[in-house]
Image (cartoon, rainbow, N blue to C red; front, side, top):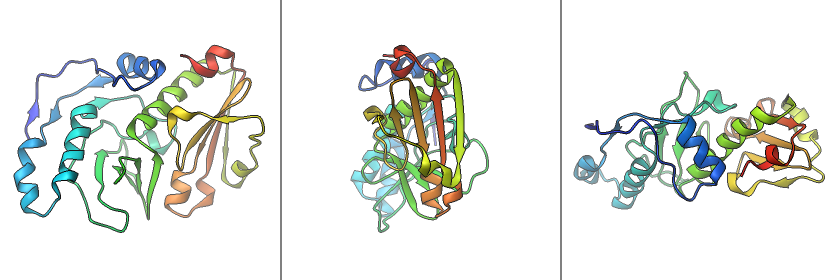
Length: 221
């Protein structure tokens, strides 16, 4: 695919992100030349890919394509660079398209689902967040909490289900599905269930507890 070489180094974050996430994307992200997917539209239509699915992939590419963000604390860091590719389907779960290559060799890929969910294609399709914005919000929150927390505790396996969430509220901006974030009076908890669900492997459950946070550390916006 042809790439657009007229690329600024600093990405422009979508306005619908929180100020914390926009700061994260524009301060810690980089842009690389992104592929122009529109020129392949006719070929893909000839191969039976519905126009609406091509339009979804093109819209993702125009908004997120070429943006590289710091690694996530789970899933071996997430996509190296956001990059759409040929839509895949149909399947029982609908059409999906790739969201970008993995940073390391993985048993799953990162995909955008039929409802624009951000997730992993493991033994089964597993949406992590209801949108790419949700995934980026979670990345930004992890970066922020990791900087300001006095303690960070990581828990794996069956012990994750014993984490006490009494008095915690879900963080709405991450749009959690398999994964979610929870906010308490002085701590944040991230629970990552994607790999456990996608591979039916409870031992892969993971939780990160960020403790000792002041009001700024809890929100950052």
